[in-house]
Length: 392
Ligand code: FAD
Ligand code: UDP
Image: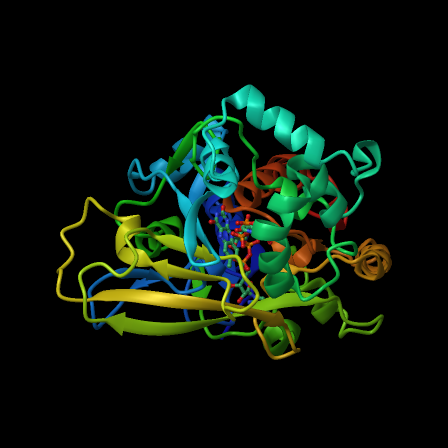
């Protein structure tokens, strides 16, 4: 195939790569080649209709869209309308069900008493006394400083042990600060202004993002197999793993991967909610997804339902990387790779794999907007040199 007509190469068809491709084609009229090694668009946010139940399944785990940015919300709603789905999570601890994230309902149920918000605050304040709040630099210290030790041990310690298999004192605090702690009965998982799911499915959203005559997508195509044939002048936006790009020459960054155990259950409703967490280490999985509940507005059949049990483990080279572990050792290694990135001419590293960061979908889109406005547009419209490095 002749690739000489392309002005831009995007490696990876996740939210980051597709946003770049769409912006470059529609706003600058560039001819964009998107290379994706998997057989579908959307990266980890991919979904498909399950053939046995007709239910839309998020094949890499439930993906809940939420953001505060009107610009990002409007951008996505331009491809498909979104529903008004509001995410709620429950957690099973010791065979009892509690609302998650931790809120007044969780506190009252766990301690078996009707607390007012002030009483609950005072209780937690007394239980967090051991925490050095100003120096909470790791997950355990941070969690205890927020909710005290009893709630940490009930709802966080076991789940985190299963999810990360890493000493919580080695994990960064921001993993757990993603979860709010509330002294009200508000049990919504997210606090953002905008929340919902693509009413025609994520798969439709992704199809529409690349539905443009200037965008060509090649699925099942690994960039490293094709690299020598790509036009030298076309910048490359690389959203694959940063260590893989450099052939792991400085070492491997650590990632968590997930295994999903799919099962069709002979009932119209298995667990009454879309995501049920399992806080205890005696249960081997971290959570169960039941996808029908993500779209209560749809008229799904009621004879059977689809569930995925989620298991977490360390990723090997051949596994899909899901979550960066980000221990202090990983941070040093990433910093060393960042130095190499600066020397790569014409390549920009973006997305969660390229920048070794946990990014929510809206953050991946926001970072892609930024790269487009700050680097790509000036490069193509004002002839500014493309400064190599990270696209964030
Ligand atoms: P990705 O989606 O990972 O896309 C990168 C793509 O690059 C992949 O498709 C990969 O196959 C491809 N690629 C890599 N190497 C090559 C190569 N050599 N050649 C060609 N292609 C290559 N975010 C939310 O906002 N809400 C959620 O509820 C949520 N839930 C999540 C649950 C899980 C289990 C995980 C792991 C993530 C979740 N996220 C969620 C985050 C969301 O998945 C990411 O924000 C989003 O996927 C980031 O997009 P990306 O384009 O950076 O990366
Ligand atoms: N977490 C926990 N118990 C829960 C839910 C989350 O301990 O019931 C911790 C755990 O360390 C997890 C982190 O909080 O990795 C972030 O949770 P989130 O639900 O954002 O994780 P994700 O959906 O990204 O897997």
